Length: 175
Image (cartoon, rainbow, N blue to C red; front, side, top):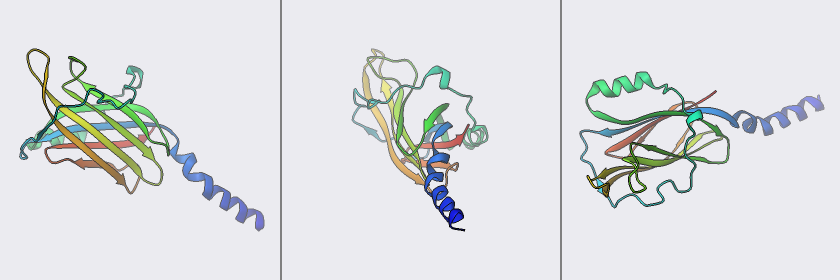
């Protein structure tokens, strides 16, 4: 009997770490909410990636939030700016990636940002994105920024980060 209690206690201590560490697919949709006026901020910083590594081409995946994407596009209330999916190793320690879209000009992309994820009993997300306005000379003239944090009660849930005029949908599923 003592052995069973000890075994149960050991499993309880190690189970969260065992289930959290591993390979996951991260699906992300960045949208602009059409009914909310855009808020431009100071231009995106030169180190917009904040040292996070860029997603490797071999880690990119086919986006899986197709039903949500279709609903967003059909509603007319949102403009989809970015729909991306990739494979990422996640665990209790935050893991960041740099995400960009469009042609790079003078160190900036039309859409750029970083996303930090960690899994424990919750899915923890820290998102920092810029939607940039770049003029004909390639100069960054203005930026819209989304900076949000979230702790979702259950892993695997669809996460909605509302930044006013910009919003982010994220889903993390095990591979």
